Image (tube, rainbow, N blue to C red):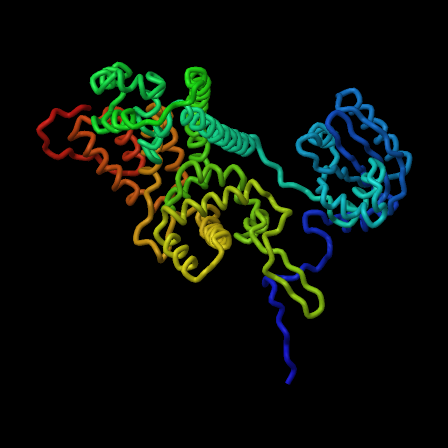
Length: 524
């Protein structure tokens, strides 16, 4: 009986062609003939680019020449290209540009506006096609030849176009992420200078130092342990009350206890104080920008099916918006494997003869922004979702690498998220007794960010349109309870919420909600 040896690699359907699926152009070449199919190769730089025209066989029809990234120069290059196409009888043509940050975009837009199909060649492909022909010799001309060979062999790839909505969402997501990174750097600088000026002060508040109401307020007002001792408890209380900040007496007692035992400060503490306070002003300014950006992201997220991810326990508005901005329209993905494949969440493999190392590190060539978004979600789930937290503990006890655990959680999440977003359904999983409520979570987000009534109502109505009709009833239950609370108690913001909730409940098809008897007058 014959023995069949199965490969240990990833299971999947084998490709019928060696070309990349999004780079295949051979049917078009066969239709017009290789000598009548042209490839425009462009090696892009910051202010100018090199380009040339060749046929499919590699015969150069327009020698390499330089074009500046100015409209007159680009129009002149297009006129020269049209004349060359007529002269050599080229019936079909593509433009292959090497991806170079964003510097290739002006040239790409110029050729696309002229009606030519533009394709992108990854610099890694250019390098691999250049080295066998010109080892140790990298010039613009050798790069152009490598781009031609890459495009002819199916490595000039088409990218799915993104409309302005998805481009704007991605820009806002990345801008917010950049501001968060800068805030983290500022926090490190502030803490370093503050520790020199007020040794041990930050440890009074533990991990809540940056979120504590009075921590930085007292430090900015006093600047030293001696000033804290001089102010005493009454002085600190007046200081905090004058700023209109809520506090607890035990917080002031901690500060006073620290001041009695504080070590000697840096001799230049008076000079350090204006430095770290100016850095703190910058941090507070960026924090306000981040809050405004998150409100914008919530509004954009509510207009996409990705808002349904809020029904997934452990997913918040920011992480869902991050994922939506990096993934783009869900229609660009055939299945969940396409998501993890684009993010590079699979191991490298080296196989030769009987040797098969199929569990190497993650592939290097991937969309790292999408990978970061998925791994961020995996971190959130491992700490905030009971099912994935239990899985992480089991894998940790089994001796699994924590990095492998993050990747496994991200891969499992990708499969579930694809079913939610592409299938336009809420979260359902055997591991969870109940799902989170989308509108309740979105309302809590806007309340935390002090969003106005009109934007909050608009986002809730937009999210409601993404919900399946059969989920209107369950979504109304927590909102009914919230409305009862606002009508029976005078809580902060209750008037605005009391005006919003009846409108949303009416959209959900819920009739008038009767308030329970309460001693207080109805605030609405």
